[in-house]
Length: 123
Image 1 (cartoon, rainbow, N blue to C red):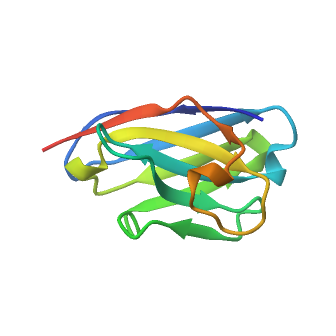
Image 2: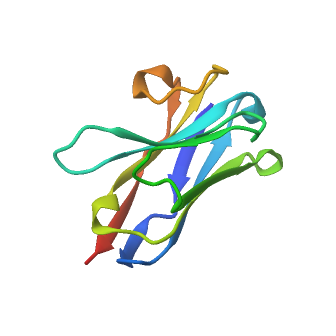
Image 3: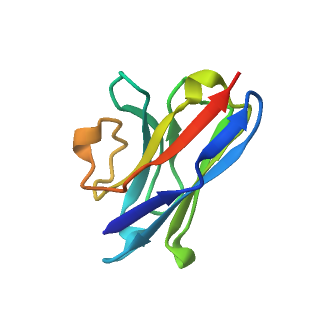
C-alpha cells in the first residue's frame, strides 16, 4: 500500500483543517489507518485510528472531541478533520496502514507510511 498525506497548512488557533490520506496498491479497505504526528524535537505520537470497516475509531486523549477520523473506501481515502486547533497541534502529520484488527497505537505496529504533511497552528 502506498499512502500520500495532504491538506496541511498554516491556520490560526481555533481554526480547522482537514487532512487526507490517499492510498494506492493492494485493497485499501483491508487496512486500518492511523494518523500520527511529530512535533519538532519530540517523538512521533499517535493521534487517531480507524478500523478497516470504519466501525471502530480511537483517539488520543489530547485530540478527543476536536478531531474526527473517517474513511471512504470507494475513494481509497481516509480523512482527519481537525477542529479547534491549538498551537500544540503543530507537527508533521503522517498516515499509516496496519493490517491488524486490534486497535494499536504504537508506530512500530504499522506496516506502511505516507510522507507527512505539515500543520502549523499560530497563536
